[in-house]
Picture 1 (cartoon, rainbow over the protein chains, first blue to last red):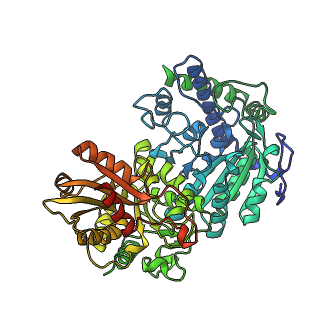
Picture 2: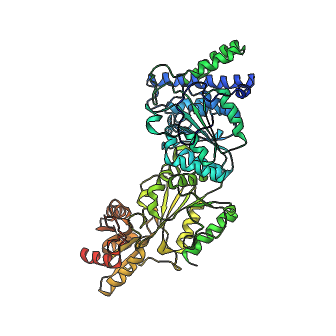
Picture 3: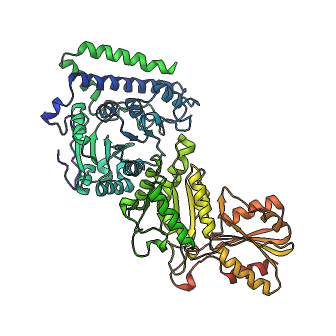
Length: 299
Length: 299
């Protein structure tokens, strides 16, 4: 799990980086909290998909299906952190407490949307939860988050994908965060794709390795919720910290299309892990409640 | 006090009394940027950035999102706006309109010229002039800088201070010169205000009478009270700038004035060519000789 300094591990499995200590990172109640939020995020995204397919949403949308449990887990460990995400941030907005109705309204181009219709899917924000909007320049949220955290001394979360992580100013900001000890949590949702171009085609280096060489503690793991929680707890008192989380985007980069089954289906794995712990009934109820709640914002 | 003294003392007060921050590259190096930066420490709020330009601008923008900070970001050479523009113009300028979140960054962007080649030279305020959401001022005198600073403090928007090194040593104000009847009205911006005054002296000696109107507030564009009467009382007018002519402030303002008054208004700025280091290849602020010759040609 220690990232190499100058090469990118090619292993992409649902258990990548697993360590046994992580199995206790979430209590049963915490795991169900994460699962409840995951379900809501997921079924909210399915409602977005339906609204887009029926042309109620007319602008591009960036859905997080397959990755929705990552913010759900982070929100458990880092409540109150300032959030600087980019496109594909619906689940961050929801997980950290953003108003779902305002998000639905934003996507439906209404004045009552969280960005009054200005932001659409990729530039949502919520002052109430400390989530800042994204400009559309991939990765610029990293230096901006670093600047905010430096000036305010408030821990800040910057979320990138494996593609935007390659922006030169992201690397410059990571170096500066290391130099100044800025309380920045940088999370890379690494789905191995820039739209459809594989990471190995674009770079030979690992983000976690580069961050480590800058002097930032970093980990490179799969998107197992217990594993994320384990390392997020470690990160809590030792920012700056970088988490490269290998995950699977189940739908297209933009829009609602699907190119088939993901490399692994974390939602199904998560569900089966909870069922294996004797929570089958809770899981079933949670899913039904999430479906119903998610649908209620689109009437 | 010189303009440099005013900048430095306003900055000192901002850092020490309001807990503001000042960001820049090599700001604490020899000279403290022409004596415009107070000799304070990082603990006082003078923060050295790394040499990663785009990331550095993003960090300053992020700091401006932190409540009450109002950071100053110093760009040592305006030509470096080609690097720094992205976070400033695409985030700071848009934040209030997009999300209702103020990002009051003061950008001190400093022009310099004279044997410094193709990148670092002259003004580049055409860049922020093209973006909504950011104010652009070009103060030269001590009083103008202080007024612009106070207006920045009173507002919520980012402000681009298009400064020029030639202003730093100025100690007195530059009043408009308005005669009831003149051959030409020279409307000047930034360092061209100084060369326009020299040109006017030459032209007056030749019997060509000149009005001189100084422009400071470029966006929103504020015409001094004397401007339209001066224009109406002269045969022609020439807008002069230390930035490029083509699609720059000089052409744009000349167009506005022609529409408003029906007078012939011409533009003169940097030539449409790259500056070289060798003095004959420089492309400086229009010289007194160039301005005077242009007026003779127009008349």
